[in-house]
Amino acid sequence: MDLRSLIRDVPDFPKPGIIFKDITTLTKDPEGLRAAVDAMAERYADANVDLVVGIESRGFIFGAAVAYRMGIGFVPARKPGKLPAQTVNAEYELEYGTDAIEIHRDAIGEGQRILIVDDLLATGGTAAATAKLVSGLGGEIVAIAFLIDLTFLKGRAKLAGYEVFSLIEYDSE
Ligand code: AMP
Image 1 (cartoon, rainbow, N blue to C red):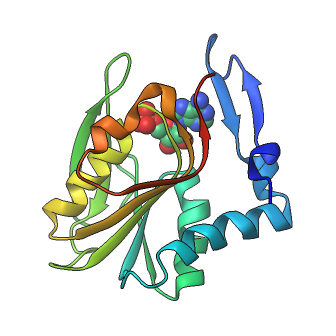
Image 2 (cartoon, rainbow, N blue to C red):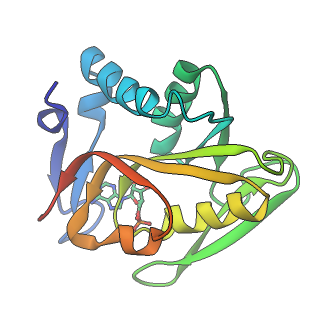
């Protein structure tokens, strides 16, 4: 299955100079959606994963489906102020300014084995902050899985020490 052909490049979104990788052209394709979810789920099928943590918001689409496919639970990592109960919070750097991500404090127990899922690895800041929260709650990170890795942005460098997996790589814009 050629997943790459299902990703649409949208130039200058959300701002000039960015080529946005639009995954909605993949998710609307039944075979594409299934192939992407199955590939992630099968890779970690024997890794004794307890929970998938999906990163807002496109990580929810793949993460929840992967968790369902693996027969395990799903935990959302959300933008600040969205989760109703007690949270832990990690800030990370953006090109201009900072952003933050939160997880419910009681979502992950000591020693639980976690697969983190997002749609796309760019600079790695979002995934690194999520990994920090998961570790801080006592979770063991089995891997961080992405549909897409923009390898030219070297996001894996921020995730050193973790297994990083991606289904599609772009080595230039
Ligand atoms: P980063 O923290 O830099 O790795 O950014 C990752 C997050 O930003 C992911 O959740 C992506 O959904 C989003 N993102 C960053 N760059 C792009 C891009 N070129 N196309 C689509 N999504 C992007």
